[in-house]
Length: 222
Image (cartoon, rainbow, N blue to C red; front, top):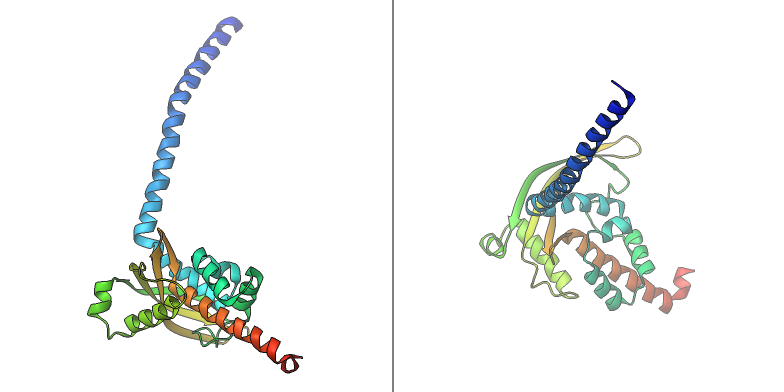
């Protein structure tokens, strides 16, 4: 085959490939977009509330502001800052310095070596009314009543409860297992942790009170 014939053949092949690529590329892009939407919808319907509960476990144990605040609605954070006259940096300090009776008080420095989901539940207003004497429902109502003092919780109706079996190990090699339930709620199309919201309200209140005490009785804090 002469060089001219080879070049002509190669050019025809390249033109065909280019023509097909122009058709296939938009189809491929659309297909990827559709898959992303489907996966997001599946996650929102089946996993959103439960996956936030997993995030909350680690956020509460570490008391790390960035992780914890990612589990809380921004407008609730704004309400808390306004109510207690705290800046964003003070909110971060409040999270890190909080000393409250959470399930992680004794094991805050321990490492979670295994996290196993042993139960998942949907909690609707009907379920709350039907099972109003259960420990989980009572806890949900208690937390909501605490938050409601700062923030209107009437629109919070779609809850998820996840019960975990947690295996922990501290720096000395001591191992411990614990079982605990965590709550999440859907608000404005996104899932947030009720436990992190409750923790933040308590932490802000504690920090604000300590701030008042330091101003009133500075000698006690020197």
